[in-house]
Image (cartoon, rainbow, N blue to C red; front, side, top):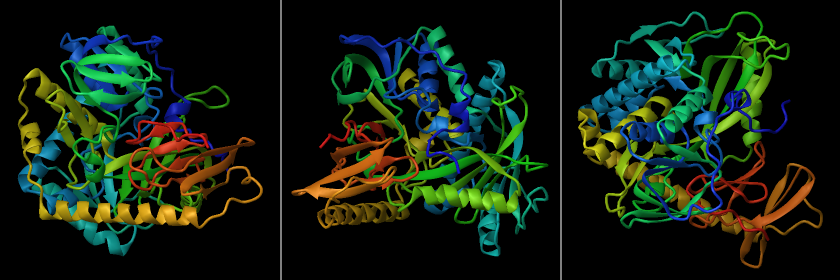
Length: 507
């Protein structure tokens, strides 16, 4: 078994990304554009504005690529599992076509950028396959959806997979990348164009004045425009926490003897199985060029899985069954947000007075969607006009979207009540939890989380500072995860990601 360490292959072999040393106090320094979040959305957006001659600052609460981008599987594909048929079931053909155009343009922009800046790009065919007879109809629906949307797909029977399949959709000539190499190139380019990137700079409050008043842990920054590229918006205006569902999914890298699939595969079945290859640049012998197999899947709503560790165990078991001799080298998980309408939310933030913008809801397909969002934001602010962006801005909320939102928020209410009841009914044990274990108990009416990590027992408030949900213990990443809207915290309460802006207080 691997140690319980959240380390993606990409982050483990990252070349190191140069940023700017943050000042002790920002002292109300002013920028034309301030971007919160240094993933691919944030850095691409920052670069577009820096190229346009604007002064740009990127504020990252942790480090570049620490959250979704650095933990993705980094597939650049317009074929995205069964997503296109799902979008057509929730919206109009016109909107679905605009979504495809956005992803095509985002994919092509990023491939061109990588090729121009020396970032390796591997061209691969993308497949959505049925691992069981039950999923064959879903594959057929996805194929029909892609043809309606003018994608040059075909129906095939994959021959390089070591297990039986029941048909697949193929879209040729898509791509895969190392996301940390992409971020390194973008970060260097932003700084070359005069932008600054400050890590460990956490946005805590925003006043949509003119200029925008952005309060951080290092003082106040002033912005002509503020862009929230933080996964889920860290501001509650617009109620986006009620419009998206936080989804956590898992991935592992394996060294596999013999031949293994070279295409990019994702199953139409549940639980999902995603496959791609990746270069291993950190072999013990110092050699380079060998490839690893990345296997992903087992997604679930954040904070609602009793044992995330069991999801890793299941991936390892499945891989060993189908790829005998596979040896795990890295494991990690990532979080993204599923929008009620199945199409990302990109544009101005309500009650932001036209000065605060956001991008969220990529639904685990963030590589092309993030660049499309950046192009949209640059067009909106700089006065451009992109036909597909106009269509996506003006899409209609369908009855299915409303129903999805109602269902998601009903589940939130159930977990809110369940969390408090469980905490109030659980007495604190006489001895601290064992290493790597935790318990949610109470002190009076206040829920308290107690855990032991690296020999140290921590007591923190188990009440999420976002909207008061009771956090649960993630036994794989040794973190506290909120089952309401996906905020996550380290064992000692330090904020990791999600809409919460504050740590869990010590108790």
